[in-house]
Image 1 (tube, rainbow, N blue to C red):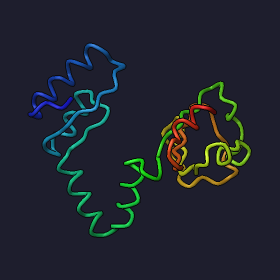
Image 2 (tube, one colour):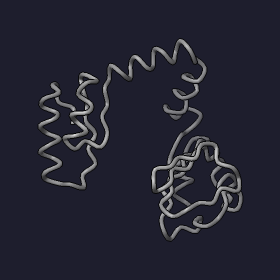
Image 3 (cartoon, rainbow, N blue to C red):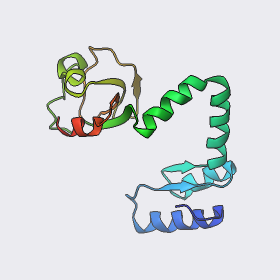
Image 4 (cartoon, rainbow, N blue to C red):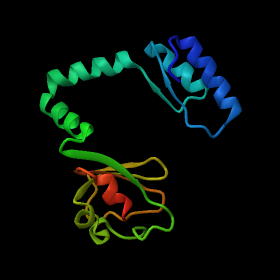
Length: 151
C-alpha cells in the first residue's frame, strides 16, 4: 500500500485485512509515528522512506565499506543475497549445515538461519541442524537463486 497519505494507507490496510485475513501487507508510512497505526490496522510490515534515508546516511558516515558491500550484493553485480525456505519434505531437514553440502552445491555461505518460531541464528556453526520451515539466508555469487532452485 503506497498511497500519498498515511490516513489513506491506514484505510486501505484496514479494508484489505478485512477482505483477506491471510494477506501479507506492506504499507508505506509518511511519518514514523504512523507505523504503529498501520501495524494495528493489519499491516505485516511498514516502510518509512524518511527513516530508511536517515539510516542510510548514518551508515554511510559510520560504515561506508559495509554499505558499498551491501549495495553491490543488492544490485547483483558480483554477489547475491537470497533466502531459501526449507519445506517439511526437504532432504536438508535433520542434517547439519556441514552435511547438507550447501556450500559445495551453491557456492554460497549460510549467514543466518531464521527458525519457524522467528528465532534467528546469525553466523550458524557447521553443526547447526536444519529444521523444517527454517529460512536459510545465504550470500553467494550471481545466480544464487537458480542454484537454490536446483536443490
